[in-house]
Structures are given as structure tokens and as C-alpha cells.
Amino acid sequence: MTNLAIARHLAFAAALAVISATCVLLMMRFGPIDHPDERKGHPAPTPKCGGVGIAVAFLVGIAVLYRFAEFTRLADPYFRGVILASALIAVVSFLDDVYDWPFVVKLAAQIAAATAAVASGLYLDRPRIPYVGPVDIGWLGPLATLLWIVFATNAMNFIDGLDGLAGGVTLLACCFFSGIAAAQGAWFAYFASLLLASGLIGFLPFNLPPARIFMGDVGSQFCGFVLAMLGVVAARFETVELSFMMVPMLLAGPLFDVAFTLARRLIAGLPITRPHRGFIFQLAQRSGMPDLAIAATYWGFVLFGGACILAFLRAGSALKPVISVLPIIPQLAWLGYVRWRSVRAGILRWD
View (cartoon, rainbow, N blue to C red):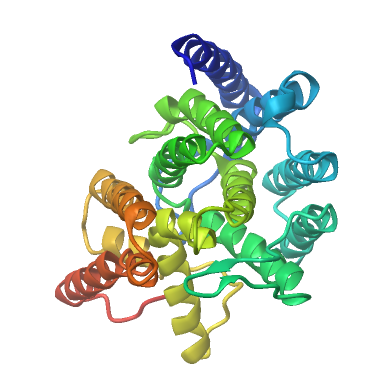
């Protein structure tokens, strides 16, 4: 890629960041308000739906790519599936922010959007396994992809409970992934992650502690959904074994937090759809840890996951499976630390 091409890409990204920031300002003036309650961490009414800027910037950018940038394009059905599915999740999650729909309605909308992506042909089909090569997994591919997209979408939605946490995690993940995709010659993945990063750059200055606006479901679900689809695109990197692990490695913090918390609540017989403050990051906040320190911890998890991916790309087949699970180690250490803080703070119930 030439310096001139990079300059053009950055100029395009800057323009999208301005579009995002403009939408955020409009939402601050005219958008819905998130009122505090006993299950939320903010003390005062705060505008939400800042994620409209993220979604609009991404959708404008992806439409421009589809129209003018032939070399970035997936096969047409896949590209149209990405556009349709991401637009669907943006619209439905925005309406959810406005009308506060029940979880069942949210889940149905997420499944519909994920199904649109899978129906276009964008699903895990032949993952490359060390010493085995591509493995045709048949009907398990579409099912696993749908479950992955829905889980990742909800993970980012659930983790969006502290100023700058979800937005910072997504921005860092996009920066790492765009560089990795460019090195692999995967130009759609490169541009899609660049577009999402552009929207976040326009939004994050308004969301860093103390936040003047929240991203809302329209931001958190949209970010999780797009990152999940990028994970499916990464699974098709033909020269990288276990490439489907790349995005989970970057998102190990949110994925582990949500998976552990939901599993713990199921084992304890607690409802997983009821709002609560039992996620690991929320326990850290309740134990007295500063919000910015918690958010920075999760940003650090992304950086660690990115470093693992760089090692992963250079490693031989024997080491790839080992490296792919290394991002779990900091999560276990974080869990132990938060548990220790919680006990010291007298937090006996994790709900």
C-alpha cells in the first residue's frame, strides 16, 4: 500500500469521524435520556444513543466502498448481507433505546440480523486446523456463526456499563484488526474495521469519563455485531490456521466477563435476562475501583490479545493452539483480583 493510498484512507476516515461527531452532538441535543436507577452506574440523567454516530459513519462508509472501491469488495451477496444486517441491527437497537423493549424482542431482532448475514453466505465453513488443513464442518458452520454473532453482540451490549469501556475496547480492537487484515491482503476486513474505528473516534471524546453521552444499545449492539462479522471474515484468511480465533482473542475481556457471569448466574439459579450488577467490571466498580482504571484494564486486555495475535501469526502450527488461549490468563487473574476486592468491600452477593 502506497503512502498516497494511506493518506487517502486516513482522510476518508477523518471525514467519517466528523460525520459521527455531528450525529453525537445532535443526539446530545435531541436524543433520549438514560435515567439512573439502582442497577446503573451513573448518578445523573445522561443522553444516550451516541452510537447513532458510530452506525451512521460505518454505514455511509460501507455504502461508499460498495459503490466505488471494487478492490475491497467481498462477493456481492456477502457484501450486501453485511450492509443489510448491520443496517438492521442499527435501526432495531435504536428503536430499543427509544422504547426500551423487553429482552426477548431484542434477542429476536439480533437473531434476525444474524440470520440475514448468514443467509448471504457469510459463515464459518472450512476453518483451517493445524496439521489437518481446511475442515468442512457442514451445517455446523451456519449454526456456530449465528450463535457467535448473537453472543458477541450481547457481550458488547452487556459490557457497556462504564464510561469509555466498550468504545475503547472496540476502537483498539479495530486498530489491531485493520493492521492485521492489511498485512493479509484482506482489504474488506481492513476497510470495515477502519470505518468502525472512524465512527468511534468521533464518538469517544464525548464518552470518556465523565461521559456527556452514552453509546446506548444502538452503539454497543452495533459494535458487537460488526466485530462478530469481522471475526467470520477473518475465519476465511486462507493462509492463517485458526484465524477464526483472532477476534475472540482481541475481545477476550468482554467475552470472558459475560460468559463467566452468565454461567455463574445459571448455576446459581438466577435469571440471566433480568438486569443486574453482577458482571466482573461492575463488581470492580462496586468494590470502589475508579471507573477509568476499570476501563483501562479492559483496554489493556485488548492490547494483550493483539500482542498474542502478532505472536500467533509468526508461530508454527504446534504453538498456535497454545497462543490462541493465552488471553484467558489475564482474565483469570482479573477475576481473582476483583473477587478479593469484593470480599474486602463486603460484597457478598454477585447480583
